[in-house]
Length: 159
Ligand SMILES: [Zn+2]
Image 1: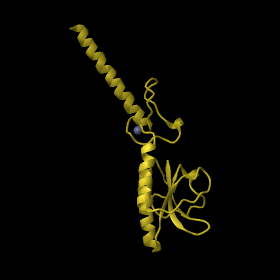
Image 2 (image 1 turned 60 degrees about the vertical axis):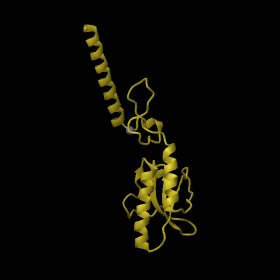
Image 3 (image 1 turned 180 degrees about the horizontal axis):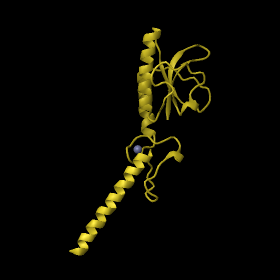
Image 4 (image 1 turned 180 degrees about the vertical axis):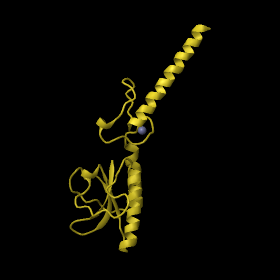
C-alpha cells in the first residue's frame, strides 16, 4: 500500500509531495492539510500513487508558483524526509517497486500488504487472491470446470 501526502520538510522547509510505502501510519508526520484530490489516500499500486502525486505537485506548483518536487521512499514507520526527485525518478521507482510486488492470481493486481488479508479460492492450490471478489470468481470458475468435466464423463459412460 502507498500513501501520498504533502510535506514541508524540517529543517530546510522544502515543500514536496511524498509517496510513502505503507499506509497512513507510514507517512512522515505533520503532513500539510488536505487540499488536492488524492492526498491521504492509500493506493494498492505505487504507479497510481506516483501519478496522483505528480498531479498534486502540478496543481500545487500552479498555486504556489514554485517548483514542487516529488519524493518517494519508505519511512519504516519513523520520521525520514524523502529526497527530492523529478517526476521521471518517481515513475521509475514506481515501476521497479510494482514489478517486485506479489500479484493476485486472478486480476494480476498488487496483493494486500499483510498476508492475513490474502484470500483463497480453495484449500489445495496455494494460490493467493487480492480480494474476496477475485477469490470468489476463481471458486466459481473451478465449480463450473468441475461440473463440465463431470458432464463429459457422464456422456462418455453413456457412450
Ligand atoms: Zn485480484
